[in-house]
Image (tube, rainbow, N blue to C red):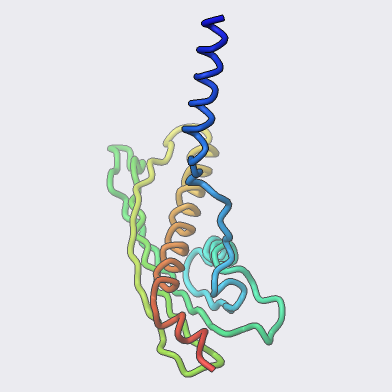
Amino acid sequence: MKNQITILLCFVFLCGSCSQIEFVLKNQNTKTAINNLVEYSVEGDEKGYLSDALIEGFGYIRNEADQNFLLNVALKEEQLKTSIGTNQVTHSTKYDINLVYELVSIKKDCEKIVKEYNFSFVHYPKAEGSNFGSDQALEDIYKNNIKNNVFKFKNFIESNGLLISCLNED
C-alpha cells in the first residue's frame, strides 16, 4: 500500500512540476521579409556555388512584379600553395575568398547596402593515388563557406533598419 501511495505522489508531483515546461526549439517560420524579392547578378570565380547559396538563402522571384531588389555579388578567389614538398607536390593550399555584396532597391529610393566579407580556409590535397575524396572534401568546404557567408549577409541586411523601413515605405 505504501508503494502505491509513493508512486501516486511521485506521479502527481511529476505532472505538476512539468506542466510549466516550454520547449525552446519550436518550429520557426523561415520566411523573412526579403525572401523571393531579390534578383541576383553574380560575377567571379565560382559562380555556380554562389548562385546555389543565394537561391537557398533568398529564394527566387516567382513573378517579375515581386522583384524589389537587385543583389550584385562579386566573388574573388586567390589560391596560395602554403607547403610544397621536395618533389614539388603541394601539401596544402590556402584559399582566400573575397565577397562583395551590393543590395539595391529597384522600386523605391532606398539607401544602397554594400558589405564586403573576406574568409579563408586551408585544404590538404591527397598527393598520391586517387584524389576523389580530397576533391569532394574541398568542394564541400567551399560550398559550406560560401553558404555560411550568404546567410551571414542575409542576417546583416535583415537586422539593418534601413531594409525594413525601405520595405514598409509607401
